[in-house]
Amino acid sequence: MYWDGEDNPSVRAPLGDFFGIGHATCKHFVSLPLSMVFGEKRGPKGPFAAAMNSYFPMPFGSGAVIKIINESESAIENLFYYIDYELTDEPLTDDVGRFHAQYNQENPCEKVVHDSDLVNPAPWDLPGINLTGDDNYVILDAEGKGHYVGCVPVEQRLPRRWPEHGLWDR
View 1 (cartoon, rainbow, N blue to C red):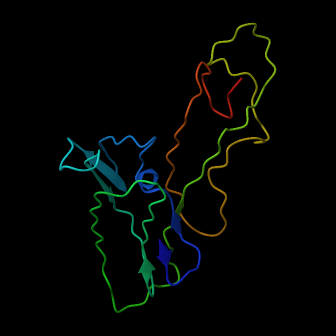
View 2: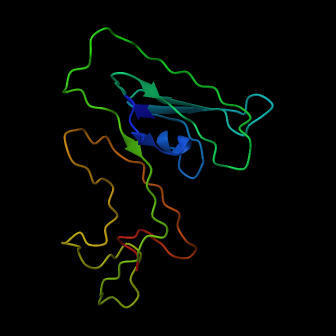
View 3: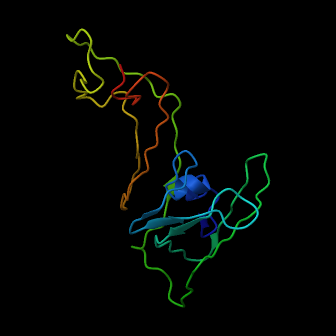
């Protein structure tokens, strides 16, 4: 999504991840800014029947461009969308922010090893405390005014290694 003729997108994320789908698995959920209604497969094509909704305000001044780009090798068989917008004669005031969202991924996360006196620790026996923040996964690095709404952390755990968090892994 591009606001007001910008060259770089303000929203750049895979469609499913934007709507909170982890590992391409649709689940029914309802929250204030997002929802997904998932039911039985409907129609002859496509594996999912998820209705994904965003209720975030996304103000723009002179224009908005929304692009959906298929980066897979498979054709999109079904794509239904509805964009509800309102145009006004009044220009936006300077204190109205723009909506931004982005997708980030680190694969694999760097393993952080802490010394431990435990001979055979359980996965939840996490030794040490990271007081510096070094090697933490950065969720937000931003400047200026705005409101941080949240993120959808999704992990892929490797076999026989739990927990597979970059922060807590052994």
